[in-house]
Image 1: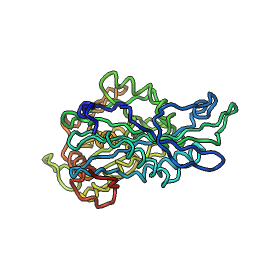
Image 2: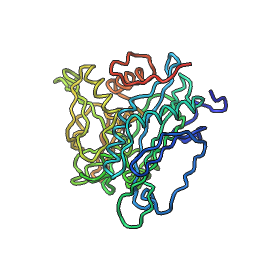
Image 3: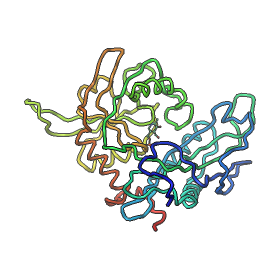
Image 4: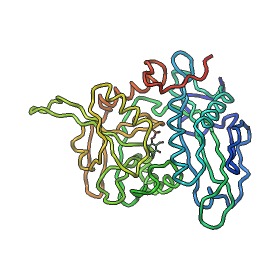
Length: 350
Ligand SMILES: Cc1ncc(COP(=O)(O)O)c(C=O)c1O
């Protein structure tokens, strides 16, 4: 294990790994993935990824568990999602098994970069698919490069699990209803920078509304949205069913974390509902959060809607339901709880 890395202080930043993994696609055939120390591409200036944004990416993690074993979380789901993104942008889909071999190779060649258990740090993989055909006329290319870039990243919560404030911005749309929002492609992120950078500068994060009516919650900048609803008795006490609510929209990324949390929520006896959620419904929720691979759950203390001078508050501390879900998922990822759903692939142990 690398002695020169302070695992607890890494943050969500790129740390240069020893190797990346690459595989090219030409004439309808993928080459076998190979590891290389070279982190630079020799790319034609007219490549379709540069000219027309023909690129897709993914994000997944490997965890060193309590037992010292390394677990890769749900990589097949990332592989399938990348295939959908590829189809959405007319790229050659990376075969699932090739994706898996590339991730494994990236892990095996960078074992020293898998952070120790107990630091909260993980080895993050950034699979990337780019169009490399030189082209001047607008259209997709026929040649592609698949790359896996591993990087250790620090814990999302270096201190304690805490809340973040989110803000609604109606001046920027992330993705159109039948655009590319459902795919993990660079253009969606570039188009959200105008909103996210303003929010980040104010110490907040962003919630995007549906682009057609600005009425329903779509998702956060790099995470899905979750709300928890509890019924209250006449004297204001929580009673009865607890509901896990998450938006249904053709413009949002199908989050693998959200899917895992919905499974765990059902197991905990919560009612899970995926439907359109009006922004004003936040007033009826007891807890809210963003969810994704980076943070698992990022609880929300407040959502600001400056245009309507409204503030939706959920209390300064993460609520009990989201905290329980956060712990349940992390326990599976770190091998502290049974992996009933077969989400973790144990790759190696030492
Ligand atoms: C726009 C967007 N939504 C949701 C997510 C969460 O997806 P996942 O849980 O698969 O990381 C991400 C992160 O990948 C994202 O970028």
